[in-house]
Picture 1 (cartoon, helix red, strand yellow):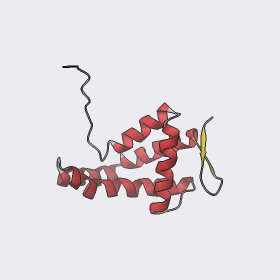
Picture 2 (spheres, rainbow, N blue to C red):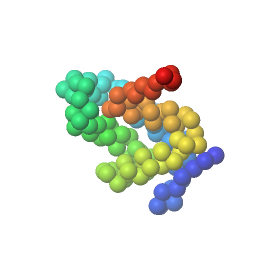
Picture 3 (spheres, rainbow, N blue to C red):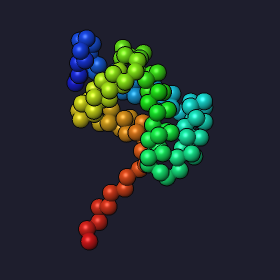
Picture 4 (cartoon, rainbow, N blue to C red):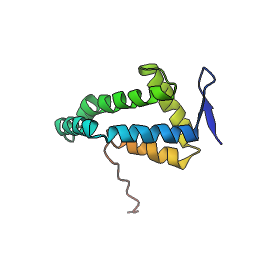
Length: 118
């Protein structure tokens, strides 16, 4: 099983990543947080800069609240470490990549890629 290490030799495996990401998604979809995110998205409209200003911080805070239960520090350093590990693990585990994409979808609009050749 693939794993990534963080500085205190704590093993964060793909399995733990899947559980942590699932818990983040559950927290994002909770009734209380859904209302907060909905209001922030309404305020942002289709403006990407406003999405980063209003929606992204809420998603980040919710994510930080969840990942501290997995041994990550609270605050910026913990979230940076978590995201770096997730990016490493998502290269090896399609489910980690899928779950991480679902979280990003809360603050990034879907990108459509044209596969037609002109």
